[in-house]
Amino acid sequence: MFPFKSLSLFATIGALIASAHAETHTVIFDNRCGFGTPTLISGPNILGIGNGPFTFNGPLISAIAYLQTGGCGFNGEGCTLIETTLINPSPSSGGSDTDISLIPPHSFSVTSGFGYFNGCDGAGADSSLQASCEVNNVNLAITFCD
Image (cartoon, rainbow, N blue to C red; front, side, top):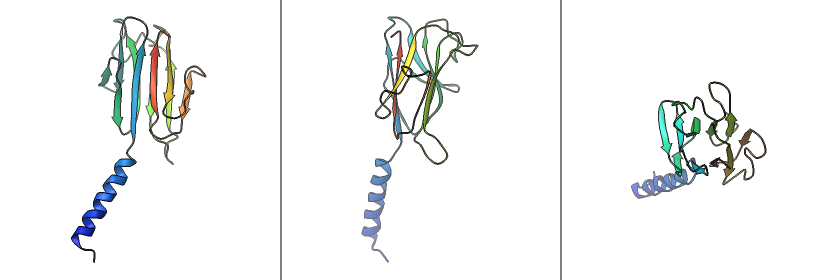
């Protein structure tokens, strides 16, 4: 049997190891338009307005981003849309995936782009309209009017 102090030490070490491996993702916006407000939404929830950074402890699932110019609906209707899922790869998940969508009811509003950083650097809208990343804790930069 372990003495109480040993169990407490093991619990503390276990908590430190778990926190060191905690999943986090950050989204930042670079609005070069001189107008509009960057908006980040997941479902009915506004996750961030403005340039950020917006950091999430855990995965960011099915989020959308757009530049609110006054003509966009709540879900980015009528505007250029960035769709993203930022998640650490696992046997049940291939990792993060981001794309630009103009599928109706979305339509072109401003030039938009994205790129991963802190992993998969260089992968993003410069290389295709959709990009995946299989790196833990990857972050995303979204640019408007570049």
